[in-house]
Length: 177
Image (cartoon, rainbow, N blue to C red):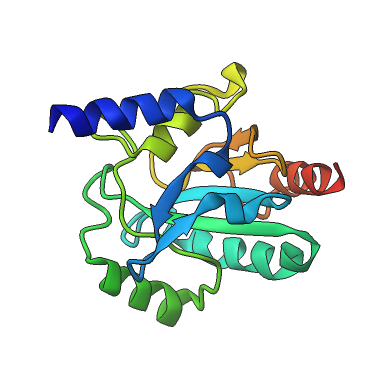
């Protein structure tokens, strides 16, 4: 166990971009995030039973509007805040597709805070190459915008609606670079 923790810590400290990580899809397959090189990526920690769960609808709308221009949205379920994501990956997938018609990529449930934090979220909360964006996640539906080069370019709190002008402006700016 110590070796695994040390390996994860080393991997996180050596990571210089989003593209250095591999994660599991909600269906259990390994996904190398380097497949998103050249895309702008919006990463969101999601939950099915949260006051912000309704953000799935504007996230899906953003995805459908900008995916052909190079935007990818990645949803990472997490049960770290108020136990608002208690379901299995299969239950989460069913909820997202039937209630919100989610078509953007969803991933296996992860831990986004504390000592067991997933390496990807360790990278993101450390600023992802931009120390001014470092800080712990406060709640579900925190949004991390990653540029085409894999570095974090913007971050939006849970209460920021994905369809807000700030989010859209940041996405359009990142797509234009």
